[in-house]
Structure formats: C-alpha cells, structure tokens
Length: 323
Image (cartoon, rainbow, N blue to C red):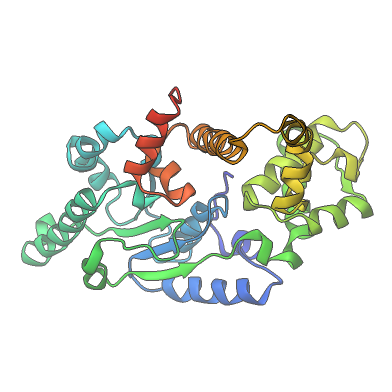
C-alpha cells in the first residue's frame, strides 16, 4: 500500500490509522505522542497490517517531516548480502542521505542475533561519536518493525536503545473499521485506474465483516482491487468478492470437506498406516505452501510454522521439497 502521509490532514483522513475502534484510537494517541519525541520505535503487528504506513505517519508527525524518510526492506535482501549491505558502503551512503530524517527497517527480525548486535553497535557508536565530535554528528531516528509480539530485538540492549513499542491490532480486531477501510481502498483503486466509482452491496458488506482476514489490510486491499477491476457493474456484490471459503470452516470441517472421499476409500480398503500417510502428506503440503508464500525464505517459513530452522531444514530434506 503506497501511502505518503505528509500532512496532518491526510493522516486524519486515513482510516488505516484514524479509526472508530477504541483500541486503534489508543494506538493513534500513542503514535502522536511518540512522534513528537525523538525516541526510536518498534512497530509490532502481524503481516499485512501496513506497518510501513504507521512508520510514515510517525515521521510526518515529527519535527523531521521535511527531512528524508528511507525504507530498508530487509526481507528483500539475500542472507549472503545482508552483512555487506548493512555495514558496507551502501549503509554509509544511506546514513548520509537520511541525516536529519528517519530510517525504517522493515522486518528487523530478518537479521540474526549477530547482525542485530552489529546494528546496535553501529547506532550507539554513531550517536556517541556525534556527542564527542559535532562535525561527525549523524541525526537519525530509527523505526523498526516485526510481526512477533514477544520480539527479543537486540537482546538486553533493547533497554539501552529506549525503544518505544507500538502494537498494531490485526484487522479481525477492528470489525467496526472494515467497511470504511474497504470503501477507502475502493475509492483509491477507482481513482488510480480511472474507473467509475463503485459501491458495496449490503450482502458484500455483511460478508466482509464476517470474514476473519488472516492476511489483514493487505488481503482486504487485494480482495477489493480484484473485485473493482473484474466487476463491470457499479455495485460489488458478495459473489464478486474472491475470499477463501475455508476460512469459515473449523479444521475438522476442512479435513472432512477436502479429504473425506480419500479417507472413506482408505477405510474400505482397510490398509494400515493411515495416520502416518495422511500426516506426512499434510505436513509436506503445509511446509511447501508456506515456503512458496515466503518466497522460500527459511527464516520466515520457520517463524510462520512455529518451528526452528534446523527442524525445517530436516523436513525439507526428508520430504525432498524442491526450492
């Protein structure tokens, strides 16, 4: 979601940040308070909550608003190149360009503990050098983001950095905002593609309010975009929305729907090893799906699955999953 919130008016009219939901109103008040300080910030929220929009809002509400705002998407860098990029000539250039402004590190936990420690030393050294020598002073605010609630960022050094944390709720906890957000995305998309304005029907509104939105704001935006671009009518109905029907099913119902026929045949045959066969296939499929969703990033895949990377590597080898 490309949103540049460079004025207070634009921020106050943006439903991604300014909300009817009490929890989000509390987030906005905290965001404004932190923006007025010079504290570094850690944004915590699930994938798809548009943490970059909140980072831009913090920058735009601060005294740095007329200075550069640079984004470093760590997940887009290969693991092999990360260290060279972070602590080589590229970072020296970025440091000069961002002076007086803000650097936003997206998905900071993509850095392992070793690189996090180096980044901590880099920040501390730059600031202490500036205190000792005004000519070498680098004035930068750092904003980091992660999708883990209990992120152990910089280990015990997090206290030294005095990071201010902002928790961004998932979309499923912002039910009162879903319609206004959908209409905001719809208006933005029709303007971008120069399409006649469209509206949501009553059944479409009821449908998107019931859906759980595991992909959060990004999934909502993608869903609305598909509907706007593929629907010729000025009214978007329930059938125009491409949603995952299985989101409404329990795990038991999901397996009954997808595996029922296969399981019945296995029971009739009476062949043993049903549990082992089914569980192995499910595990292999799950790992493959998550690998594809994360562009085969093993760190993100392991984090999403809730297993460690060594276990993931063992499973990839065991199931001969191609990468």
